[in-house]
Length: 278
Picture 1 (cartoon, rainbow, N blue to C red):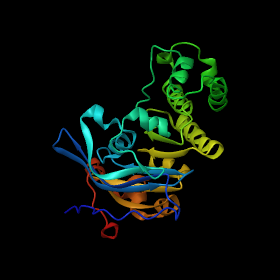
Picture 2: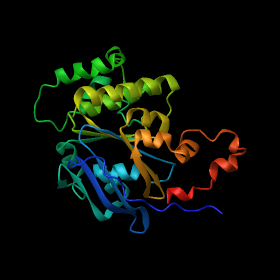
Picture 3: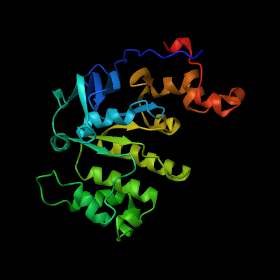
């Protein structure tokens, strides 16, 4: 009989105050559907933190709670608090959250298809008070030289190029922190490797803090310093990226290390969780 994982208390990633602190939040949709059930996590300044888990675990809901986008889907944080730079941001409008330094790269890119790449990039700077964004556009083109060559409508870009444009648009806001939701979705293995290399370079070169939601756990843990694993709206395991990569259960359930133990699709959909996870 399958056991249900109970949440563990998240380990402290650093002794300094984190840039982002999510404290025991619950999220409810349509006043009745409880999605997040007391979730807590820390994201230190200048780090890449991975948020992993199966579909339906609540990863995207976590990002929307942070960025203030729950309201667009009749969701709200009903308990707990979200702190950014020591100040509460749960309950304030998404535009104000962007102005404070958080920008979300949505799942599925969400670029504006009937605008050019350049127009999409300029759109990313809409919250900025300074008018000259040419230096930032040049910076984006340095990271994504392919975008400079694509002068037509963004809807004609390949999936990989649209993902690059979505990340570039986030950089135009000069964020302190980027929330990335499934950046590898729909990309070839070669493009996944390229996109994650650029994510790592942006973090290293610009000091932008990144909270990364990703189904490709192997790719996420290759660039992250710390990771959290979610199930059923709760954090069930967390640790450094190295600790998670070396964890036998993480290897089996998320890194494809099951070997010959998985004989059927049923075993992929339903597995017995280890008691040591409790």
